[in-house]
Each structure stands twice: as structure tokens, then as C-alpha cells.
Picture 1 (cartoon, protein in one colour):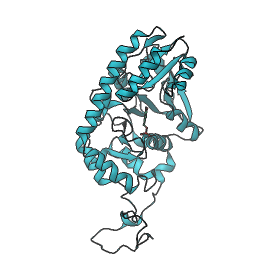
Picture 2: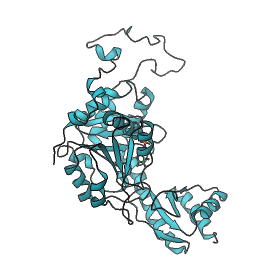
Picture 3: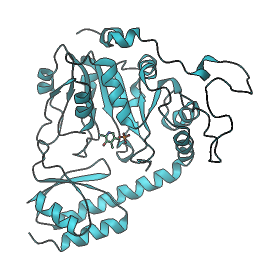
Length: 351
Ligand SMILES: *Cc1c(COP(=O)(O)O)cnc(C)c1O
């Protein structure tokens, strides 16, 4: 099989692109007076220093993340959520109307939506019935126009980690980009694929501050990849994609890794409790194992149970429309009190 070669799969317009050059990135030296970017030198109505454009490359934030995640700064891209990284990947590598991405449903919805927005076709190979990668079927799903494979592990909405050997097979045999979306990695207790960047030049790992770090409202996601692929991200991203406020708050949050870990541990304990407690309910037909902060359950009548829980002011996610997820609800682990309320509601549910 051919070797991975970035130049072969990068879109021509991206290869040729001369990126936007911001005022401050053209200047090097020790200036005190900045009259170069048409900012408001008097400042704003806020007391913060938000009258200057933010660092386009988020150096401080990357440095902190680098030490926490053991990934060199030059291998990190910071996005406005992982969703921005997903969109940029599709725009960098997939020619609209020609190329396609490969996904493994049931999985995260944004791969498909981002591809649709960019007029990029979507090849789908279902997971097996027990939600594993099916390499024989995947071989059939790859064609000469397949540029990106999205692997979500732990997978959303099923909750399980996908098989290491199968992911490794993709990385070694597919000559396009393999994205491993690790949004839920902190709940899984395994080593990140980011530690394999040197071995796999076609690997892009996605992580986020939205889940274990509890910062879904900030919109920060990360892509870890080779220097060359990070260069592509930086070339095509909006110049100031992460606001100064967001950079400051994210940096502040990363200073307290111990607290984030403590919260993660509570959520993992609560998940174990719910997994046990769910067993008492006859209307729950299958409780799927979970390496994430949610549990997928198959029930008698998902619509009915969903509506019942709403009537008790509890919202879960009905995933029944997804392939292989008939009558399935995805339940996010709440606070201990919220989980108690869920269990009480379930005890009072009569089919
Ligand atoms: C929640 C989630 C994300 C996070 O997206 P953000 O844009 O970073 O909030 C990414 N991938 C998967 C699979 C998710 O479930």
C-alpha cells in the first residue's frame, strides 16, 4: 500500500493559499505603542484588557496544555470547540463534490453535519451489533476519494472505547487522515493516542475542555497532530479564533488539574452506581458498558420513557433514530442529587 503523504491529500487551494497576516504577527521587537491594528487605544467600557486582539496562536494556553498532556506545543491546535477542528479538517482535505469522509455510525453527529455543510459526501460503515469496528466492512467503505476517517473513542452515543488494534490497522493502512476523537478520554483511564503522534504521520487526535474539564460554555477544543498538519490548521483557521477572554479563562482552569480530576472521579463513581442501580428495572433491556460520562440503555419504549422523564423535569437524549440504537436513551451522569432524582423517577415509572 502507498505511504501517507500530506502533499498528496491536501486540497490544491489550501496548498497555494497565502494566509491572512495579522498586524501583530508581522512585527517583531520591543514596541510600547501599538498603532498597527486599528484597535481602540482608549480601551473599552470593561476594566479588562480586551481592547487588543488576542494571541492568534494561544501560546500561553498551549504551553500549559503541553505539560498536562505531554504533547509538544508545535503539535497542538486550539479550536473554538472540537467542532471547529472537525470543520477545518474537512475544508483542508476534502474537495467539495468529489471527496468523501468515512464514519462509523452510530456516532457523533458533527462529522456528518460538517461534511454536508461543505458539500462533502459521507461513506458509512456501521459498527457491529456490539458496537465494535468491523475492519472487513471498513475495507469496503474506503475508496480512492476517501480523505478522512473519523473514529470516536470512547464513542458517542454508545459509550465504549473502540478496539486499539482496529484503530492501529486504520492508521497503518489508510493513506488519508485518521481522526481519533477523544472527547471522553479522561473518563476512560487509558493512554491517549496523542502519545503515538511520532509513529503515525496521518493521525489527528481531538480532545476538548467541554466534558471532563466542565467548560462546554467556553468553546475550546484541541487537535494534536504532526507539525505539518498543525501548520495546515493554522493556515486556514480564522486568525483570532479563540477570544482573549476564553484564552484567559481556559488557562486559569488548566491551573487546577487536581480539581478537574476530582470531579471526573466523582462522575466515574456515580456512573458505576447508576450502572448497578439500572439493573433493578425490568423495562431497561440492555445497559451498555461505558468508558465515558454517560450511559446508553435500551428500553421497552424509549419514547414513552423519555416523555415520562420530561414530565418529571428530567431530560435525557433519545437516540432511537440512530442505526443500531432502537429504543435507546443516552443518559448523562449528573450530580449525585440529580442521579438520585433520576433513580426515584425510574422507580415510579410503570410501563
Ligand atoms: C461533546 C463532543 C465533542 C466536543 O465538542 P466541542 O465542540 O469541543 O464542545 C467532540 N466530540 C464528541 C464525540 C463529543 O461527544
